[in-house]
View 1 (spheres, rainbow, N blue to C red):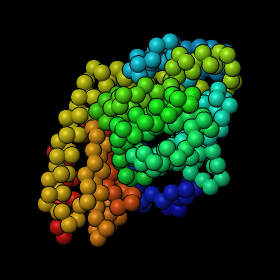
View 2 (view 1 turned 90 degrees about the horizontal axis):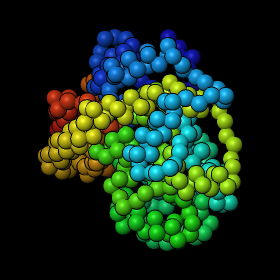
View 3 (view 1 turned 30 degrees about the vertical axis):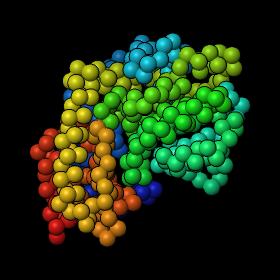
Length: 376
């Protein structure tokens, strides 16, 4: 059947009919273990029972509200996020996608500072459009090399509205993590030059790296935190949560923004249930323990195939297996899909961000298959 979808990307010729926990089913009845959580969204597993029940209940009450009303779910979710982040007397806005939320955070930083330029690291993606889009026409985005101290010293931070830090960029397949010294120095420069710090936690938030947020690995409290993806466990909801300092700036210099699904009760109710589920099931700790096991198995693979594997990188359940130049990672990735495993691939790196509900037996199946492919 000829697809009627605009070909912005090229999926496999497979038709999904069901998603359940870590397993995807195609129209031929074949099963796939999803080591990507969709697009890094389904941290609780696909079609999680608690989220489905919450959705069924909330749909009967209210899905969408418009601009004349407030709703308790949005207020409560903002309070929860502030508590998790460490903000007091801050506030949030809820949108639909991570790209929207990043662009909103950057827009606010430009509005309050009167500056246009933003700084990001070269391993982070930021946004599908707007301020974070990677384009030669985006003259206001300054990209610095990750962990390169000289790269940041060369920048005049007096011209910078905000530094957007992503503590575990996965979009380019690299899954690399900033050094403490690098983050500390950037934070110093931001504070000295009245430049805001925006934590992009769209991928790294909601426990993905074994803490609620990736920035918690550093001595850092951002001015704004952006969440998305796993906040809705697959349902499109995102958030910009700001500190009291930013909120005071907003009061002094108002900014109007309105879009159709801003602060919708359904998305916010889902976000609340996601946080509640993670807490009650101790899934942050589960993520850490499972991630340690997974990374250990990848390290054993590296020891067995030192000529094929260059490096293992991992933090929680964000993992990468970088292959040596002589090993064709694209071929390996394709054969893994044929064998029933959905993994990420880019730049000769195999990427794994599975749901927190992934089992050791499923990890072992993947490891054994990679071992066989590397041996062959």
